[in-house]
Image (tube, rainbow, N blue to C red; front, side):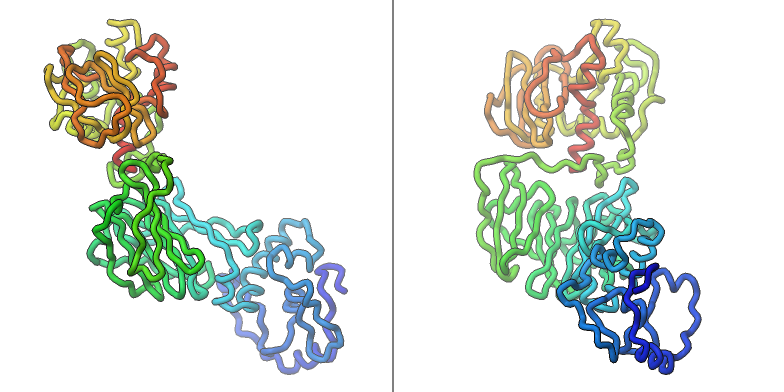
Length: 493
């Protein structure tokens, strides 16, 4: 027994025989040794490292019986061979040996991927990071690559089929890209296809079943499309069905269980729906999963198609850039100096789009959010929303769907599908009532003689008392958010 490595000694007869049949190795550069290839030219004979890595294998001519009751299956098992060394440097060295030699030689490429767990995510830089583990405890480092088509604004996904790992994501062009790896280390290039119904504004879902890969996504028409492949390269056409409850408002889910495919999605009214299939061709009807309703999944950083350059904006920056009507038009009739320089052209465009969603055209901002000094000077309070000028009788449309929570003489609050509470104020005739479900673009009311709409967005559902403005600026900013930021996030769901 070797005291330094913990490996058992070789049978000397086998060692001498191995030395005679071993041919000189070709010299390799340092880069090639990133994962150390420790197989010798004497194929089929046990090397010292193989002896240490796999105690189940006896050397030729040895009388020692293999210990099949304690096989090396994971890196944790591998460490036990070396006495669970606590040396960080030695553990890193052993990790490289285990990943680069033991797994790849014991299980070959097919078995290697089959015995690995994979994790993948989108980093803060919108690049895809991937890592793997053989036991769920000891993981490789997160790996990113600066390669074409790597950037995404959506969650990537990984699945395994026939000993190959497949990874997919939605690119900046809204196309679905896929790549593969036989060892979790070296990947093929990202590839997409210029085919019908490929474009999506949501993440792609993927799983494997019965020798095929399956992918699903939500198309531009809100229908769910599915396709399949045996190799991740040649795919069937994207197919959807014109059936009840097909319309989806969020990332789809796709799972394989007990020989069946299961698809899930969130319908426009917030209920979760499920269906199943044995072959992707014939699906059961979409069935609502109980009466519980959910909010549409929100991308916390809003990194989608709608002005993705604003994803780096902090809440403070959004609040400041939404803070005063003088930042959205010069020479405001409500006083104050021109502050157009404080707000980017992109944020002003977000305001324009929000205005069009409510009024059908751009209207002037009459008061800003949380930082409007002239509003504070006039009322002694900080504005909890924005004021959007329009004449009495102008129809007001819903920015986002939801359920009417409350209505009073001239205000109403809606628990909206984005998880926020939207308040519309200075309303005259109203066309909706408490408890009613409303949809995007539905007319809620018309403006009263205040000649402007007060639009306020509060965090979560239920109303927190602000009365439209509050003397404590910190309180305003804690219970509400800039309506421009809320709308930008809504567009990027």
